[in-house]
Length: 301
Image (tube, rainbow, N blue to C red; front, side, top):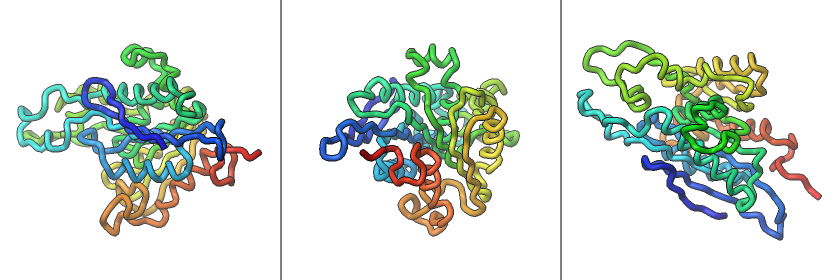
């Protein structure tokens, strides 16, 4: 396996690339599917829980893996009591993370031959806020304004599929803030404590699903208190309306942020969920071109 990190842009973002290596003993011509992981963290930080353990899980299934740490200010910068103490011009403001994600995907297509990448299987995945970012790319990749900001042809950063886990697909503030309160997430993503509706809508992938949105695998839990399951349901309904292939799994039990559904990604017993644990296998069966075959991206000779 080849592993390296690459800086993305000028705001401190970086990506970790885990590449399988094709070899003569197995198949020198093998091309590997790639999954791009966007960890959550409310755009305040990027969570380690949705980083290495997830990468290793998919590496074991024969994927190349890329973990994108889009730029954030860090959680401690938002632990303030006054608006005046918030960081000016936060690096996480839309569309900065979206551009960084696009650049990470571009690197895959521009170096596909060197790293034996199957360009028909570039799956962009995200967890919680990272799911918002992944879905942004999935619904906005074809927009001319984004192509202009990225500076590369849009086809280079087009996801072939989406994987959205307890994704925050609607960033609309749920309530008016009382005087003196600070909505850190809204500020981190918009740079304003009172953003206009146009900017909020721009970050809401539910509003931007079209026939150009890639197929999606979505999972959520009904008991999620931080990101309501309604997010997944509304996104799936839009996919259905536009006749985009999708699979939706809404598990009855489980809190927000279960990741892999076991203690690899959390210390509390509530991180263990035997139902949610199955989501990786459900996703693999959905994404495999050769159904019911373990490692179903490859054909025997």
